[in-house]
Length: 467
Ligand SMILES: [Zn+2]
Image 1 (cartoon, protein in one colour):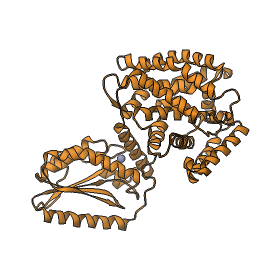
Image 2 (cartoon, helix red, strand yellow):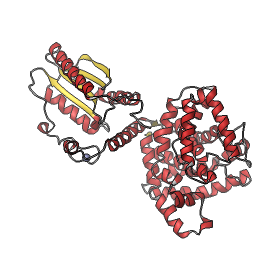
Image 3 (cartoon, rainbow, N blue to C red):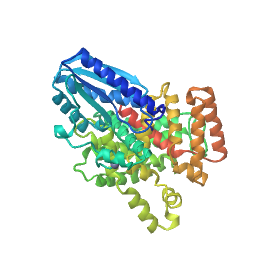
Image 4 (spheres, rainbow, N blue to C red):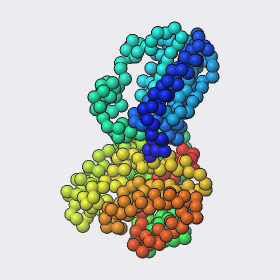
């Protein structure tokens, strides 16, 4: 997800006009409240886009964190919030001495995960100049990307705007994940959320190429009932995954993962026994198992948040691509390679292992926030989320069936078309999915990877209370 999406580009004139307006407004506040300290806060973003719906909501979240900082200062006038094309801004009018307030602000800037993205101006009547960070004993602001002096990097043009945007998007994603709280739950609550993920996914219709209650898609050997049997057969495994995470002591998380993998091997046997040898949930055994274990581990002692869970997942699966794919490819003869291994050689797509190593960014940064924003009933929200995922991943299952990786480009295009005609909210959108289903059946295509990601998204949405 891109936080700058939907933002308008502004020009230098608009920036200068805004600066002039702000100076005038600050002077006006100082004249009206001559003994007060005026603190103005705005986002400090590179490039021509200074605001967007997402950035506005982030700004609001930062202000919620900033408000308590003023609690020891007397509020002289209620803070005024202004939404400008040049970005949202807020002005605080408080008691206190200039130096103290400036110190409080710099401390906030240093300690808050997004402090570096703020412009904080502190001023009062009679102060002839702004106090610098250095004068107050702080080091100069550091560059977002390399940690050197920010001024030097800007002057020397050390980084591209694209690099800047990518870093800021990462910081904003991490911030939002840190705000998504996962409460402590009982084992059955967590396991049920995981089962819900599998059962909702298969109940969702119409899905292109995938099994749902109306169509078996491109799968001749399974029906919705096969998936229900398979989900229930995996219940003991999900309980085991929870116990592994809940009881694991210490920080050697790759060891915790190896315990889970042993349980996963048994779970696959249970699954195949329940489905007469059909692979329904192999992907979920791997990724949903990891998530359940990570959640159980992260909530052993207290509530947690998605950012922490993501870190646990990355730590559990560190070097998985290197250990599993790179080494196995050297060792295994061709006919013993799994589909994922073959694709890794052929297309250099690290697949689900690579996703796990990175802490499932498609689910955490894209699908879950997207699902949270969706309106309508479960089917509408989840169909949109499925198509959003499908348009943004290299689906190894789809690639395997298509026999080439260019299918990802087609999928991107289909996903875009779906949203252009209103997504699941319109009859046209639903017809498009039905047509796509027919085409997928003809071409024997299915998007199992997107479906697996949807299962994970539903699981997490349940935990954070968004579904
Ligand atoms: Zn730099």
